[in-house]
Every structure is written in C-alpha cells, then in structure tokens.
Amino acid sequence: MKLYHDTKQAHAHCIVCGNNENNPDTLQLAFTQDTDGKVTAPFQVTSRHQGYTGLLHGGLTSTLLDAAMTHCLFTQGIQALTAELTVRFIAPIQTGQLIMVTARLIGQRRGIYQLEALISQGQQLLARGTAKFIEPKSKDMNNPV
Image 1 (cartoon, rainbow, N blue to C red):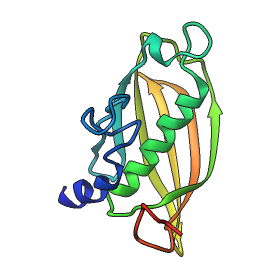
Image 2 (image 1 turned 90 degrees about the vertical axis):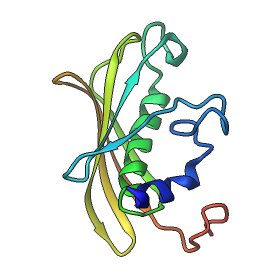
Image 3 (image 1 turned 135 degrees about the horizontal axis):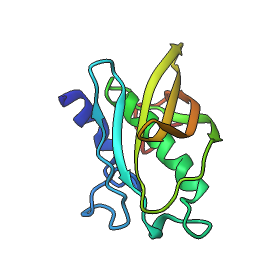
Image 4 (image 1 turned 30 degrees about the vertical axis):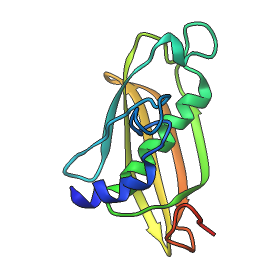
C-alpha cells in the first residue's frame, strides 16, 4: 500500500481526493483497491453537486470517472495525465443517491494506459468512461513537459 500512498502524494491538493488541509473544496473521495486491481470509492451526491435541479452535474460525473482512473494507475505506482476521455451518460444521477465509482486498467502499451471507469448505484449502471493516460516525459508532475 506504500506504493499507492507515495504516488498519490502528487494529488495532495486534488479537488476530488485531496484533504481539507490542502484544499477546503475537496470532495474527499477515498479509493480502495480490490484484489484484481480495480479501485472503488463511494460518493454521496448532494445538492451542492447539481447542474440541473436534482441531478448531478455532467462535468462532475466526468471528473469522478477521471479521478477513479487516475487512482487505478496510482495503485501501480504510475503517475500519468489524461490524454483522452470519453464519457457515456447512461441514466440521470439524482441528488441524494449514494453512488459507487470504480475503475480498472484494460490495457497498456509504450507509456499509454487505457482505462475504464463506471458509476453505478446498486446494479444500475449510470455512467461509463474510457480514457487514455500518458506518462509525462518528465517524472516531475509539477512540470510534466
């Protein structure tokens, strides 16, 4: 677990997974890793997160999917940047729902990682994202070029 913790340090100020000391606006998602490498985090959708009245903002849906995929890479000690993100909004996500955000690595080749993330409530799939992540040329995430 040290590998995950060390890699995640580059995200200490993250709007999704950071802590309140570094970012008072963080959502404070806490991802856990399954034995098969998948990561999962619960998220309580509140009225603060809405776009249309009573519905989770689509940009935040995309952000949650992206963050899950980032954390999936963190569990393997990989820091990479999102190069391409595709989101499929399957069903509206209502405020008041406790949703689960999951992600898994589906492929990699020459520093390019392909991932998939899902948002669900119970057995119902609400959103799906796929993305390509690229390791920056520099290992310094404060100066990735």
